[in-house]
Length: 582
Image (cartoon, rainbow, N blue to C red; front, top):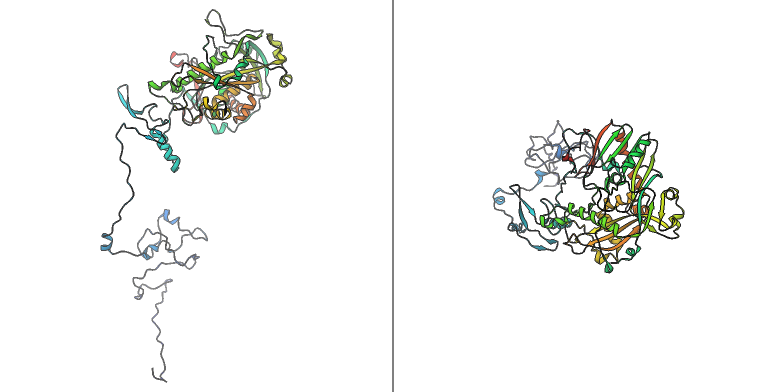
């Protein structure tokens, strides 16, 4: 430009938008340029949001769906940012021809080929069970050999799923559905449903009981069994004795006491009471019959029910399951029958027949004319608790043996006036005598389904008895809790437990005694984390519920698959038919 010539500055044309911020629609310079609208009141956290997806392709559109809108909230007040969700229009788009010619090669291995039906293989997790067909009533169903339909077992396909689930954080363990202990009839009325988590919160202190009567005879324990080891095992013998499991209504002593009490009272046996006090630990279904007559409550069991059978590994992660006929010796029913027989025979073998502790009143249930075998030694101790000002509780408890403990300081602190008055003759002084309940744990097959992962007793019992007992407390929490409660109710000084194992894992008829342990009931309850006050609270909750009902008959049943107990009102003639007796 020549010197002296004035320079000129040309102003560009500016379009004024009178309706808001941003360019006007008539602006040609910004045609096809992406633009994200915004509000002047917005608090800007970043210059541009390149990560917000959009559900709309129209320019200036906002996110309309509620699910997407909740993802984009202004930091100042949960308000949608004006213009959010428009980052999609800033993305690079491929040409149609280039997009059509593009493909991705998948190098990920595909799923394994399915194996032929019925095949089996060996893995680190165990042996896969062979699939077989079972025909029942003309219908064919597929099951895994060694366990029931839909059940998982050691070494089966569910074992592989369990191993995979433990590695990757998920589990495909099938749910086991159990049958109820009793069939609810159409004319029954459900009155109440109580969940276990509510029962775990109740508590009650029952105080000290009062002795009402003593009936029976005890034998002293043979302490040679206390020194047994696995290498010195003894064969479990079979005894022909009469064992009594008399119901509450058929107990003549309880009925006699009932007539003398005029205030509200509850009558029950120790086994039924222990089942109620340990209800929250139970897994298998059970039921009791409750009869209300005026201000008195009689809690009983059904005739010929499975109530008195001993369960085996009820609380195990994988409890015993119903199997095929070949493996039925390890089913829950067979193990319960085997465990009950072991308990009865063991309780007699550890006694000395020549050393007795006789009480003035005889066994109230033995009848020489009807019972072909002599009665098993037992002391029936009838005791009474005052449950506050609400009602009186009368319980028939049972002691199984007497134990000679000379100069035991714990015995000198006890008030044994009532026992001394009822005692007629004893081989040893009462001041040197302790009372005990006797039970037995049984090992069937450490490698079978339902063993609960317990260590083999013949290898670990002598060196690691604590580990064996810890495993039994885990797998039999309900059974051991009931034994402990029965011992506390009876006022036993010891809870003696024998460790019985099959001589051969496949033979359920021959057993060996591997060892004997004895524990203080209260200390053992603490060891297995059982709160006796919670047990009393559960029982009182059930009784208070029934006391508010009108006179009649009720059934309290544990749900077979849920942690719930239900109270039903039933007709007065229920269980009088033969179909309900089994």
